Length: 233
Image 1 (cartoon, one colour):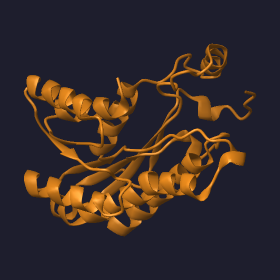
Image 2 (tube, one colour):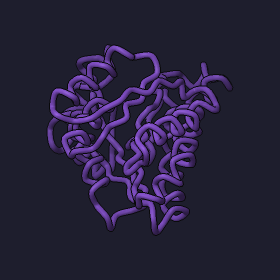
Image 3 (cartoon, one colour):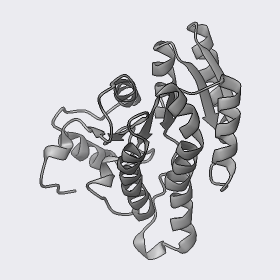
């Protein structure tokens, strides 16, 4: 299960009316919407290409108008582009910054009036690499590090009416084609002995959404791997 779908189902199970954003994966989004409806929930679909500068604000205006308000904003859309340092160019950097940083800010900024009215909250999906970077994903890692700082800054800007937190997944759903031997070595380095699941991330999102005295925090979901000081991979 993908992370976005798991979050939608988790929040739907909590009784929320879920507005599902998608870019090109209409079929998968519609399947999630149908599952939410089958479980007795309420859901709607909203298409937008968040790589376009004004798309995020337009999306948020549509969502708030349709729902009549907003209680929780989950910012999970992101690109995860593997690219060697020697192959980097300005376009690669701009792609990650737009989708992984600029779009989340625009969504949060556009949603602020509705969230203040409801005393709601924002949950961002960052990454454990925001604290401990890894190679061959420089634009992604830098954008997620900046997103974590955006979360902390927004927590100050929007207090006391709006809370802002983040979930930082570690190794969840290893990329397709990841070498089997490397995957097993990575799994062995995780104290809890397994990779994370999309449901692990979704439960953390719900916890933060339901925690009225928590703001400005990044909850790391990595099976304890971040406590290991030395990595050899």
